[in-house]
Image 1 (cartoon, rainbow over the protein chains, first blue to last red):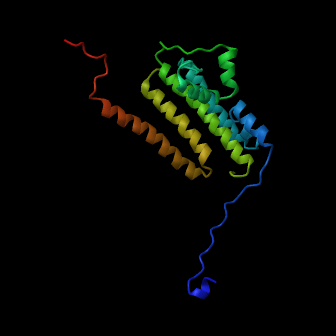
Image 2 (image 1 turned 90 degrees about the horizontal axis):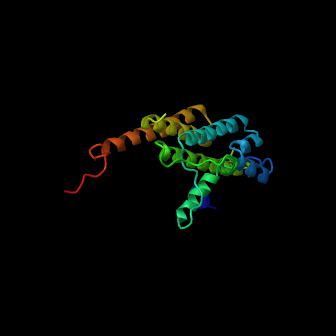
Length: 142
Length: 64
């Protein structure tokens, strides 16, 4: 119809390619959150999952060596809720550190601020990995 | 372990490697993004440090 009006038809943009969904979404997301990289390993991205595991664990290790703060909710400080949720993003390691070995940062430590940044970053990175696993299992990402 | 610069470089290395693996697949694209993030973080940190250089770093001077 458009050509009959003298206007050439516009080429239609190709629809976004969807990769066939794979695996169980709940298992992928839960495993991705509990153990860094495990969601990717479950979705058969073994090398990438292993690399993510190493990166997140190294970040946690450095954060602990520097005696950084592993956030917990402090009454009267609403921002501590967000920080705690971010830290809990690291999954099982958070609960192991908090309740297993009763890790506590040292506010007097020279590396306290850096360590806190490393620990919080580890949690946030793992949250992104969880979302990435969700995208992969839904077929929105390769 | 407590060198500020070393820790900054280490942090930039971890974060840039993470986002490179998360966002890019091709080897050339990965190297390009890694360098962009890594150099951006380290260079940005040095730039901010240089801008703050004139400001005193010790405790505030006592009020006479």
